[in-house]
Length: 143
Image 1 (cartoon, helix red, strand yellow):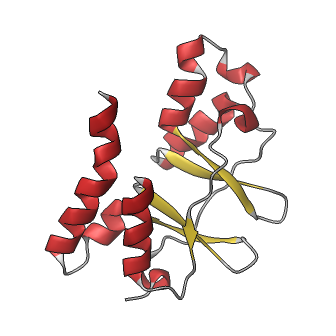
Image 2 (cartoon, one colour):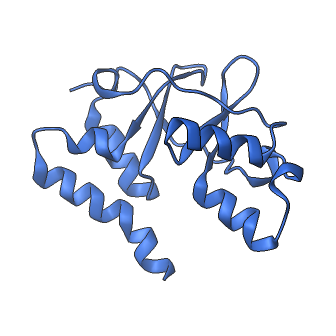
């Protein structure tokens, strides 16, 4: 199975200059905990998660409307290509402890997002379980 077969394609992007309050409202409205951060050409330059907001904004008692997305986002972009086999996405998720992965073209332009729940709907529950354990090992180490 290829990544393009299971990725979500209607992906909203944030801009670096957006503030965290707007970003959190967009997450709430879309019922997601993750949004890519893109430039004007939709090239992915980072990601912002609800966890990023808590760790980089709330714990420092910073006003969300005064914090730019660029200050709170994660700059490391873990991505795969639409034509990649879904196993590559699973491997990247497990290796980097990410529950979502961005799908980009060769120029880094966003094409979609694959979440762990998208992978869980596959027919190989054993492999999915292994990926879930590896992704969640990050959370287990931080508590």
